[in-house]
Figure 1 (tube, rainbow, N blue to C red):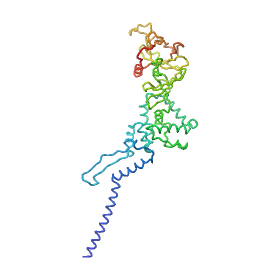
Figure 2 (spheres, one colour):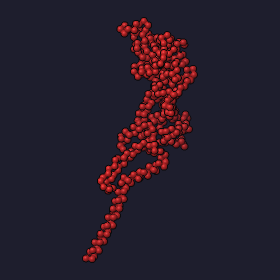
Figure 3 (cartoon, helix red, strand yellow):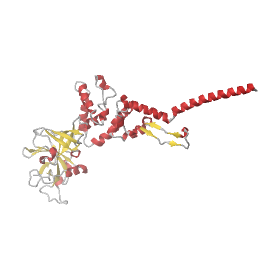
Figure 4 (cartoon, rainbow, N blue to C red):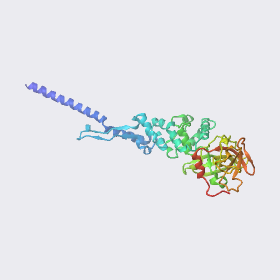
Length: 397
């Protein structure tokens, strides 16, 4: 009997020891699986990154870097009833991640691109930047500006035209401008220009940043050039423009009118995309002459002499002198000549009216009155409204 009791007692002690070890092992495993362990571990990782291992400033990152689900607390104090789920942004489905990134501003995309290589590859993609390009620059950037950008890209890809030192000046300058300070390319060697850390020169993001930081000039047209000089009221001229983000305005360089002219502090509402691709020294081929009738709104090329470039001037089609201006008896639409009126000038001004040949119009004029070129008929109400908004407060002399 004594031997039986000793055997049972030994078995009980051995079972207690084994169960205690199993309990401690299971408790240790549970700690690894608990959200508090991973919260502490993630805090360590963030602290490790914060010390500069990735070379970014985490206080600038968007708050969406992690998504927390609400705590699900059960009754009682048992750790099994308290759970907190945390999901990293990279764990989201691709479509959900795209929806989040599409709602970021350009500054937000720049910050996110500095987090890791996966975010960088996504945040510099063209489809995310096309929306921002269209929203901010769509009203002033046209085909001519795009062609200039393509030429700019080609020139940057030629080592003899743009070497590493010049690329360093361009890319290095971005580090001094928020929110582009995340971008710190390595210029230690020529090969470093082709590393993944460099922004692709032919990306839309690169184009956007080049415009935003005032690194490139682009072609557009300016209404009422030279700060509304009386000699240019209700006109629109070709210019090369550059953006100043500090003042949110533009600087323009106009084609020479005997002297090169510049203008600063040009607001967005004075700019437009060139409506036609005709160079300012060439005659625009008019395709609307047969359709012109009294009351139509038009733009016509005009220049002071043959050495100057043409600008586009606003006017309307008027009635011929032989017409009584009656709607029932007006035949001006079928006449060989067309009367153009510029009502910003008084009736006695030599600039008030001019006549052109409907069937065989070429550049006409003289050194005294200037030369009239091609004609555009305005069909869009927004174009007409723009000219009316620019109408001078008083009649010009």
